[in-house]
Length: 305
Image (cartoon, rainbow, N blue to C red; front, side):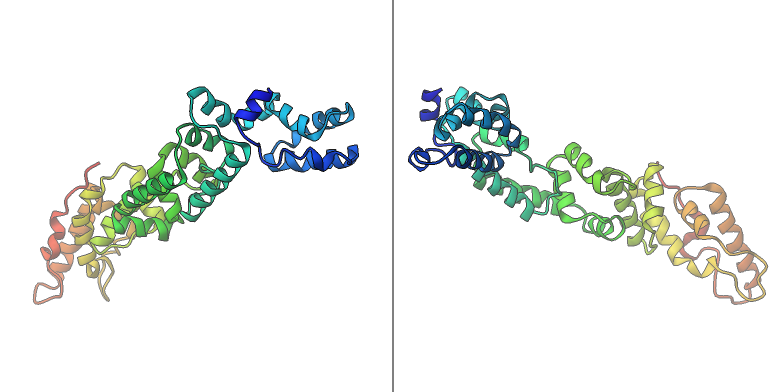
């Protein structure tokens, strides 16, 4: 154990032999408690107290920490690096690395719980991944995240409450992102579904028809292909004059639900719109404001599913 301690560096605040030469047990235990708190190993406080009461110095006790299973789990990277023949790393260096990476990810806006626990850092340390390299990766992932359709990104922000960090997390690791993001969106659908809904909403908006978040989500859940609806929603938007009822007109309004249904392939809804267009055209055949072929309303295409 002594050889391991010498080879793998000063684990933080160790090496205080002279400091404790004249100190009593209470001072030694207070020091060890503070040390264990720094390490996130408060569970070892009873063991440390036993060692102090047995007459061991703080320096000896801190060296013996390496033999404790809890310590080996917490600082697994130290032992894994040794097994791989990598340069040794101390506890203080592990803690400093964790602080730096946690700060890097927080600055990138990644959601809480996403790559910010000791377990998450082990692979980085064992793979000898520097903080600078992780920063480069984050920038690369940002580029991918920003490459998403700007309209879809806007829909995600406006209607589903996602942040830049949520999207970045999804690009980095979709499965992990879903687990963590859904903790903040317990009553909302998974991020993948929201992304699909955002694309649907973006295409409808490009056609001139603004879907609500709930409407876009409903269409996404039905498997509506976003690429198939822009033109159909464009026809609906261009025909907005037809959807209401004019004074003296006996035909009913075309409801919003019918408009959405028609744009996404519902035959009955398209037929209702077509009949209203024909009725209005007949009423204004002498020079009305709407014709059956305006915006192609009689030929609304069906959305692909």
